[in-house]
Length: 256
Image (cartoon, rainbow, N blue to C red; front, side):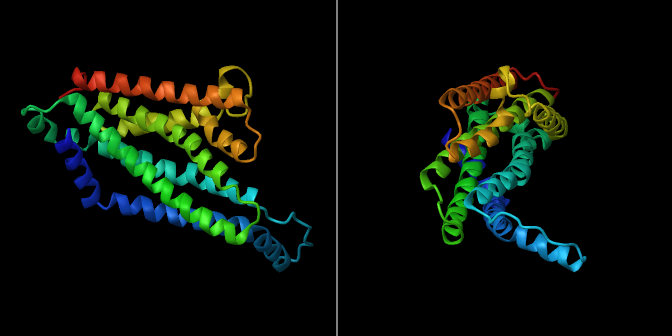
């Protein structure tokens, strides 16, 4: 297991994916603060240039910064990490390295666990660095930054990422290639997102609702019942996808 972890970590370091996620996270964090602070002024300036009478807009608040941060994390950071995960889980299979690797006494279970651990360490580290930069910047621009609530909301948000990364892992175990795994995962994400407006039944706790619940948590609007059910469903489905993916990979159900 240690050898597999070292192998996967060196691959991440060699391909600079660590620096990509850190750089992307910091850029999005800075963009979130700047957008929240100056978007209304830029809109007013643009309307003035077009001869349109400006209207009074609310003064930007720290809540606007939270919204921008999670919007950027969901629309960009999440999708980039998802594509990196798809490539990472499928790279050995697509290059034929798996045939050479499993000719040796290497556990397939340990192989998938190693990749799962490394990709989530990458995601968590990138998200944590971006959150630190966001927190540091926001404190100097807005009043009322909720430090502990914000970092607590990161866990809620990451369960959302966890679910889709494990979905990609399971699909790679079935199709053995990145293309179908990514296509199905992205389509599944957008289809589930269509039901986000439904606030009843199981739809209220779907994994795609977690970014919204993370924002509600910061603002003190998330109920304990919704929080526990959403996290429980997200974590439960992630564990189920992990077990199924490892089982399918171990049984070699993909075409060689």
